[in-house]
Image (cartoon, rainbow, N blue to C red; front, side, top):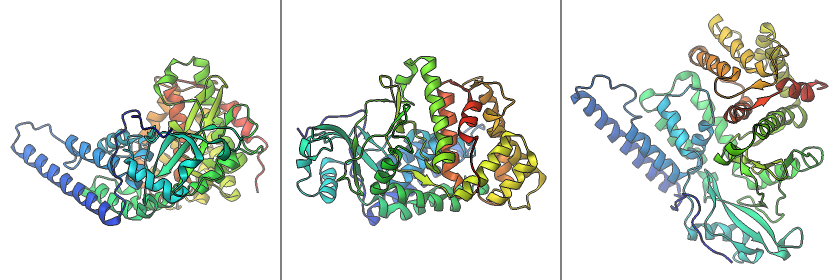
Length: 462
C-alpha cells in the first residue's frame, strides 16, 4: 500500500529549490515587510492613539507575513526560528520571539511529485520495492525534511520480517541554499536595527551555517545514531532506546525503526503522573551531563519532539541525531572546571576559566564581570551542594526565580560583552537550557545534586 492520507494540520507546498527561486521569495517578503512598515508609519502618524510603540517592522501583520513565508521556504530560515523558539534568553525583541514560537514544527510539506523525485534521486527509480507500505503524506515536517510512516518489506528489513519505520526525506537543495538563506535572513533581522549589537549576529550565523550543513548530512546522523546505540553509550541502558537505522539509508533519505512513544513536550504528557514527569526530567538532565562528561558527544537540539516517552517500556526514545556535536577533551575539561566553579559559587574560578574558554577577554568592566559571574552561578544552583533537593522546577519554583534573575543580567551582558561566546557553547547551552525548560514545563522535582555526583565524580582531567 502506498496510500495518501491527511496528517495533522500540515499543508503541502512546493519547496523553492533554486537560488533564483528562493531569492524571488525573499525579495517579495522584504517588499511586503517594507509595505507593512510604511502602512504602520502612516497609521501612527494619522492616529489619535499616542500609545503606539515598538518596531515599525515587527507589527502583527508583518509577523504573520514572516511566519507564513518561513513555513513555506523551510530550510535555514525556518531552522533559525526553531532554534530560537526553545530559547529562554529574552535577549530578542518580544515580536521576534513570537515569530519563532509560531514557526516551530509548522513547516509545510512537499507535494507528492516533489517527494517522489527526492526518493528516486536517493534510492533509485524502484525505491518502492523496499517497502510493503508507504504513507505518501508525511506525519511531520520541519525545517530541512519531512517524515513518513512506512513498512519495510521483509526482504529489505534487518530482521527478515516486515518492520514499521519512519522515513525522513530531505527537501530538495536545502543543503546548497544554507549560505544564501542565512544572508537573506541577516538582511531581514538587521532591518530597522532591531537586534542589539551584543548578540554578535555574524558569529551566530557563521556557527549556525556549520551546524545546518552537518544536519543536512543524513549519513552523518545515521552514524551518530548507531554510535549512541552501542553498549558503551546507551545500547544497554534501561532508561533509553535508540532506534536502529536501515543500512541502505542515504545522505538525503534516512530510514529508522518506528517507535511508539509520545512527545515529552506534547499535550499527552499532561496526563502522566507526577512521578513519571519527575523521571522524564531527571533522565534528560542526567543524559545532558553524561553526553558531556562521559561521551563527549551531545545531541544538541532540545526540541521536545526529539524525545518520546513510552509508558509501557518506561523508556525515553531518542529519534533525532542530526544536531549531534563532538567536543575535544581540552574543551570539556575547561568547561567542567568553569561549571564546577559556578556550582561552588567560586567567583575567581568562574573568571579564570571563562578567560581560558574565551567567554571573557580580560578587558571587561566590573559591570560585565558581575553579570557574567552571577548568571553562571545561578545556572549552577540546581547542582549546588547547599541547594535543597529535590530541586523544584515549574511556575513559582526556585528555578522560576533563578530564570527571572538570569534574565535581568542578559541586557547588561548584551550591552557590555566584548567578545562572542566560544563556538562550542552555542549548541551546548541550547541543549542545557532546553533540558531545564522541559523540567519546568513538566513542573518536575529532580535531585540534581545526586545526578551531578553520579556523573561528574571520578571525572579524569587531562
